[in-house]
Image (cartoon, rainbow, N blue to C red; front, side, top):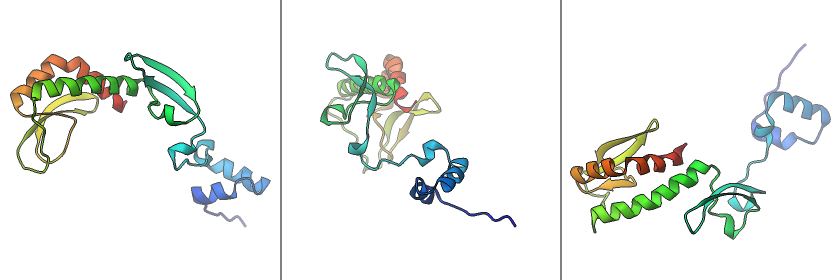
Length: 159
């Protein structure tokens, strides 16, 4: 007679290492990546590898232990490139928008640039906040035309 048992991933993690036969069954049904204990806090990571933006705005690869100096390391190079573009866009938006700051609690249109399926789009929103936001449609359209390459660089954060 053949019987089967069901284990959740958490149960499998708890049983792993307690019995050789059980370990064989668990490894036959779960991948090593699944069985790896999940880190619940950033401080508990055992290693940080990735990319960071240095003071002269250069991007460097790094592999180190987590500490106070490694909180600015992105896993992917495209993410580091994206935040470098984000910083530039924030300065350019402040220049073109002046003192205007969107009030997401009112129901007036704010003109936005957002990313969808890897492409930049222009639209408006009055209730959902976005990073690339402008006080008028004309300002948004001019910003889009002037800075589309930098905008696309920013959207690499999501890759």
